[in-house]
Length: 209
Image (cartoon, rainbow, N blue to C red; front, top):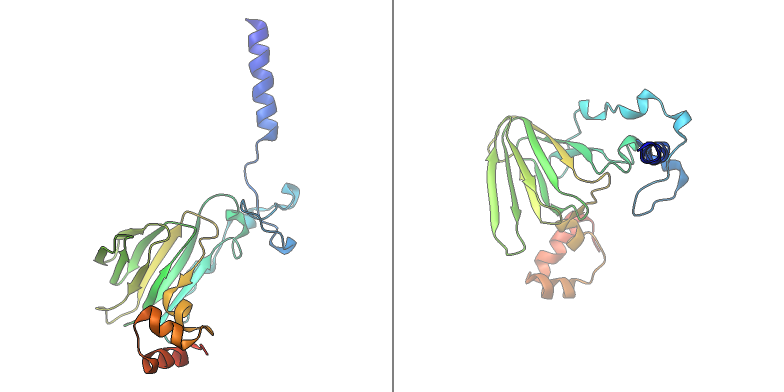
């Protein structure tokens, strides 16, 4: 029995030595792999690395969508590197909208802090799941599916906190993907069924050529 106990003790000790509790990102390294950034040396990690105060500041909603997203992704919050999560603050002025978009790398969970937010996503079978949320409500948006958020009914600003199942969830906004580029208008017209005037108008609004 003694040799079995010693064997398990050795295995546990070796595993414990090799275990890594966290990997605060060395974002200055310029190296990014599928598993994340390399770690800064643990001797240089402090308590401040694990705290982030950026979500306490309202975003600037004076823009074309009357909305602002303040991220706490690995680029802003290196402590989430390798942990499979991140967060963001969502500010929506009255009438504000986060246009149809996807997060290729993460599921999203939205929690309404105050106000009313109409949310929806479209499944791969083109079924729409739509809900107007109030304070304290949550809604989940599965990874990769098109979804949106609108402060449609509210006369006051709305605030939500969103969490993601990845430190780098990725983002592609459908309108910008289609019209904020130099893809020839003739191809866009065929692929979107819009006419030439509509395509050129949208390119002009969103900065495409």
